[in-house]
Length: 217
Image (cartoon, rainbow, N blue to C red; front, top):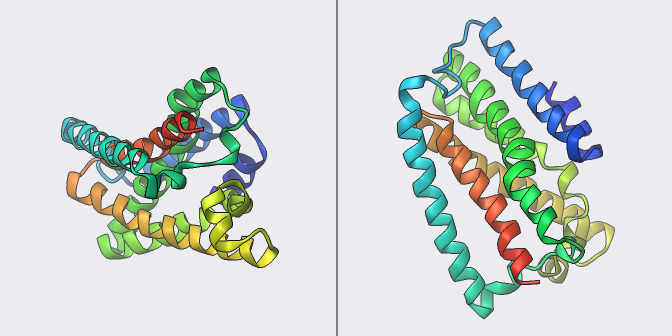
């Protein structure tokens, strides 16, 4: 199901991608329930939502401070440059920050990797196995979205170049980086007991990244 979703999300955009994200998230939660899992296994137990929301707000604030510092410092400002922002206007930015990122990215990926997948593997093998399996697959999930990464971001073009080899190295780096990020997301899920904590961090990293990159065009 995740392989099919990954291909569709790479090919589709707009309403089709959003609908795919919602449908796949619901189907995955159905798989969890069919396999005997609970809302707690998915990190969605009602008693943990308040704690998870507090974690999420704190993490969003932390990312905001880090991004602000990075945008103000000349040595790190170039990391936010992205050629994909050149034709973006305020309406598209708002759409991405408030809809495409939280629904099309965060909802699907967190439900899949830190919710259902993590919950099912943790029930059978424990947290270490759950973190490992979830993070490895999360890294591989980003192969398709990273295919043009080396040419989209000038900072990466400088490092990897614009050749086929450079593109391959950029994809490998993206897979390793997102896999490591997956470990962090899983640990937040474990410590908070709620899926809202990694959701908050995931949204902040992506959405605030769009915002800062847009402002620094």
